[in-house]
Image (spheres, helix red, strand yellow):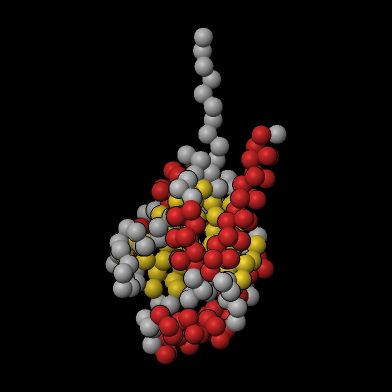
Length: 204
């Protein structure tokens, strides 16, 4: 008796964007701790590691020369220059995980998110969420509290943040990060809701 191998359902790509200092990295970390079946796509960057960051865990830290080689070889799904440094998403890892049916969470800036949406760089379902700060003042307080940027860099980040916030309407959903625990639960709820709809369509 022959057996028919069931085709693996294509995984979901969740795009999560937020202004610098709005907590997207912490949000993703908490989501992953609560769901072992969801993974984070580790981005490549030319910036230096911050205190406590680990290569291959938080980012793949590379030289500008190495980054440009990856771009030229077509190894990145998207890439963008942010705060005078380059960021990109490794193509092969994300595609393999989605093909295996995993939910991949990608925390990227609005430039990279726009590329993924407009160029249809990946086949399959995508769900995008933009995390808003309660106010520019709160965002300033958070950036100053990190103690990783100079006053000039903070001003630059705040200017860019206000431009990024204007793009929030192009995302599927927006969530305000006023309370971290509540924000994580709300994003979790939105993801689960989308996954249920996706599964219902697939089963129909």
